[in-house]
Length: 153
Image 1 (tube, helix red, strand yellow):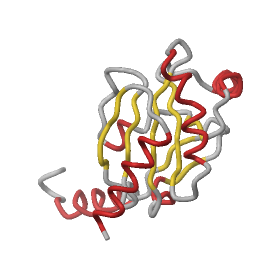
Image 2 (cartoon, one colour; image 1 turned 120 degrees about the vertical axis):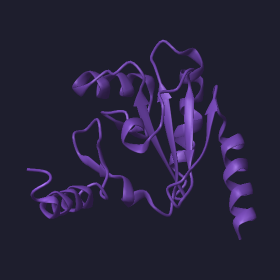
Image 3 (cartoon, helix red, strand yellow; image 1 turned 30 degrees about the horizontal axis):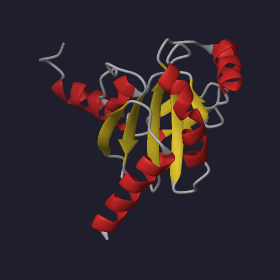
């Protein structure tokens, strides 16, 4: 069948891949988040776990960064906690930024971090700039973003 109807296969692949442009992730709240809706903003995808003391230390810093209209912070639970348990855990830990119900890494071509906390820094054009390990401060990340914006202007 593949040899007999190659045009149909090409057409099916074209339509199948066209649907991949709109990458979406599910938030812990159950709502979808379109990755393309974050274009024009710096995105910090932070991997964390309840047992990770440095993760806990950086939550207030990330909360502050998320209040900056140029930056969106997304939380990914390293242990795969799901549904209401994830929302409850995030509230208990003081996470005010958006928590994702799934790891965006596989869809974005990222590997699971080897250490926690891990923060993937994504430029406003959607390109991964770098991955940072260890607790980050608001000052460190603001400096990185500010330096990158100054260099691109």
